Amino acid sequence: SNQIPVGIELEGSSKVALGFNVGILVNVSPKVTLGATYRSKVKLSVEDGEAELDYANDAAESVVAAIKSFDTTPLQGMLPQETLATIKGTQTQLATMGLLDDSEFKASMPIPSIFSVGIAYKPNQAWTLTGEAQITGWSAYDKLDITFKTAAGEIVQSSVKDYENTVAVRLGAEYVVSDFWTVRAGAYMDTPPVQMDNYNPETPSANSYGVTAGATLNPMKNLAVDLSVGYLRGEKTTGTFQETFKADYTKSAIMPGVAVRFQF
Image (cartoon, rainbow, N blue to C red; front, side, top):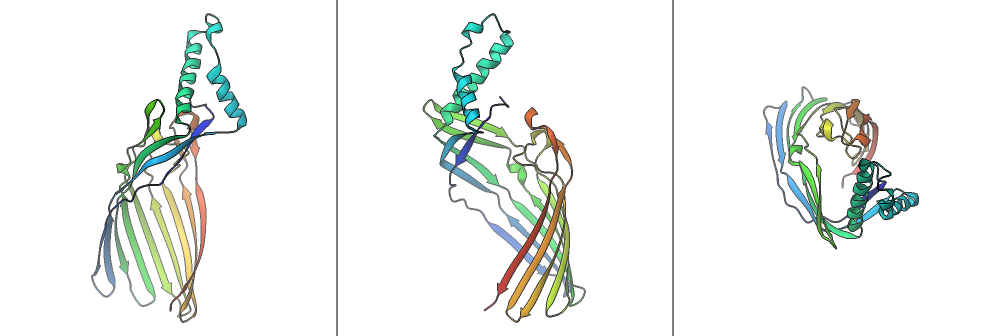
């Protein structure tokens, strides 16, 4: 049931997957540049992964063991049939999960395609203005099937994803203050791939909005120091996957960054 305090830890390495990238860059004029890129979908597969049951704690493991060994025979006629059926169903589910412990598994999932178009406008030597729109093909991720190889044969667990394609829009500006430093700022919006009826803590997602700022310092001819900070905030979202995970979800993040570049 949704309340069983045990999960499955999966570990494995994917096979080599092949994809391709294509792009084009066009200088429309000395001030305007257009570009477009496409990255193909790639399918990642794991063939001989290892699965292991992961209990919330020792007490949870003891509870699971007690439920599995519980004999309902003396309770026949004392408890409602619905209650007895629930206990039996839980015992069956736990017995199936027990087969997965220390088993091998195989699974595959897609890395989605990405199509982007962008424009850069340079009104003068100091300013550069940019814009980009991006479509990510998350609709390729419709479900996740995991096949476990157990002593009782193969057991397939399927998880519905039904992801949707997403759209992201980004705007940016850069200003060259002097040979010593350059400043930047930007904003972006991103839509989520997860539908509300498949929402869960594994992939919390919502319409996201962010702002960024940064600067590049050039203290020496061949040395550059990049400083950046970004703030991301998602819309408050109410979603349900299973009743256990029905909740209001919010997200926010602050993302600082520092990089040092030296050219020989």
